[in-house]
Image 1 (cartoon, rainbow, N blue to C red):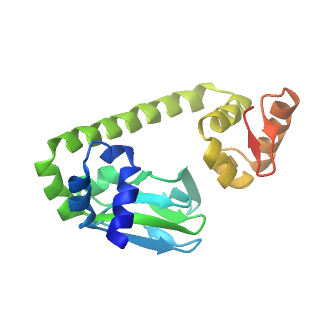
Image 2 (cartoon, one colour; image 1 turned 30 degrees about the horizontal axis):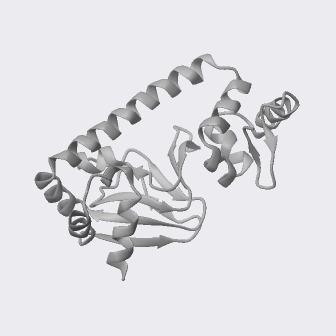
Image 3 (cartoon, one colour; image 1 turned 60 degrees about the vertical axis):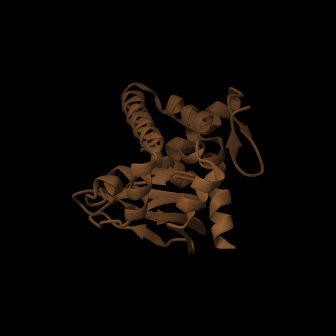
Length: 208
């Protein structure tokens, strides 16, 4: 039953969209699903992972600690995001830590099995390279935007690009992502509401 469920999940992930039913079934034999309650630690900085990790339910925060021990959130991820895939595939220590902000689940694919699968499916290797390149491009864009944009522009950009995530997260969590205080976030939301660039819903705020 779980294998069929895993195949159904793999079909929803863009990375595996080119695989046929037989190939998905083969990959599913190397995978299992792990469930986590809210606040569970997924991994900690410096660990080595023996699994490719794909978030299939819930919200995960990825974070580091600064020199004073303060937690600095790098980002929040939701359904079908790959977690720390670059370090996992390079077999190097994980560069950050991760925690579930909600109840959730991960699909874990054995790294050894995944590597063997890649050798016989070179097209999938290409898709992984494209995924990593897209993340690098996104990181560069975010760095440039965060250096150049005003607080209000950052807030609007977040709600435009992360409509589902914006509804899943609390306001202080969004403020953490944007590297601003909750008070600054609230002031800018109020401005955007007045300008009708954001609207309030029962679950939070969204771009109309």
